[in-house]
Image (cartoon, rainbow, N blue to C red; front, side, top):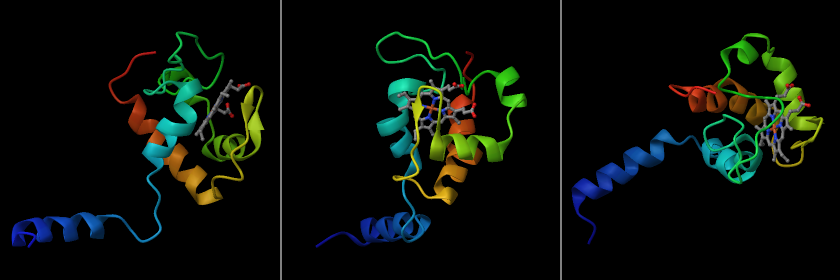
Length: 109
Ligand code: HEC
C-alpha cells in the first residue's frame, strides 16, 4: 500500500505538469547543453567556448528579439543545427521565454 500522504504528493506533482507538456529544461540539458553549456554560458563541457548566443550575457540578451531566436532554434543558425523536427513552435518559444532566461539567473558570462 502506498501511504496516503505519498499518494497526495504524487497527485499534486502530476497536476502541476499539464498533459503532454514536455520537460524542456531536461531537453535543453540533453540536446543544447553540449554546445551552450549546462548553464547557458556557452562554455562547453569540453572546455570550448561558443562564438554566439551567450544566454548569460546581458548585452547579448538586450539585442535579441524573441521571435528571431525562435526561428534560429527551429531552422538553425551558423554552426547550430535546426531543431524544427524535435520541437514545435510553441516549445521553441517556451525555451526562449522561460527556459533560457532561467539558466542565466545569477550567472556571469
Ligand atoms: C552543435 C552545437 C549547438 C547545439 C546542439 C545547439 N546550439 Fe544553439 N547555437 C550554437 C551556435 C554556434 C550559435 C551561434 C550562431 C551564430 O550566431 O552564428 C547558437 C545560437 C543559439 C541561439 C541564438 C540564435 C540567434 O538568433 O542569435 C539560441 C537562442 C540557441 N542557440 C538556442 C539553442 C537551443 C534551444 C538548443 C537546443 C534545442 C541549441 N541552441 C542547440 C550551437 C548550438
